[in-house]
Image 1 (spheres, rainbow, N blue to C red):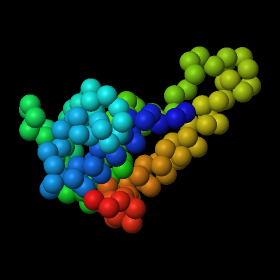
Image 2 (image 1 turned 180 degrees about the vertical axis):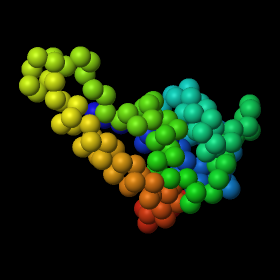
Image 3 (image 1 turned 90 degrees about the vertical axis):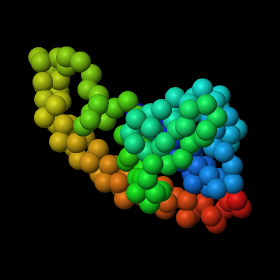
Amino acid sequence: MQISSRFTIAVHVLLCIGAFKDDYKITSDFLASSVNVNPVVIRRLLQQLKKAGLVNVKRGSGGADTERPLDQITLLDVYNAVECVEEGKLFHFHEDPNPCCPVGKNIHALLDVRLEEIQEAMEREMRSVSIQNIMDDAEKFIQV
């Protein structure tokens, strides 16, 4: 299992918006130059972030901004906005384990609770980190 790069790109985008919004018009081209991807990738991500209520995007070359202060946007908010994971379903079980096999017939009993606990722990940690926390850390490295 691997979380897609959409998540880290979305965090990158939010950090750029926070870092540069007072000095530059934040367009998909501007963001794409920082992330080093095609602007189409950024536009798709911005639409996902907009749908989740995390950013506001002005049509044309109006630019993007956050809908909420960065300290009110968590990594879990971003993850939920851009990852295509059905709620409560981070782990996907293989279909139709063999009911005649002692492992196959018990695999759900063996793993379901543990995997749910792992997902809850990940979400709890992601909920505890805001984009502002990362921005504060970035200020040690970034001269804006």
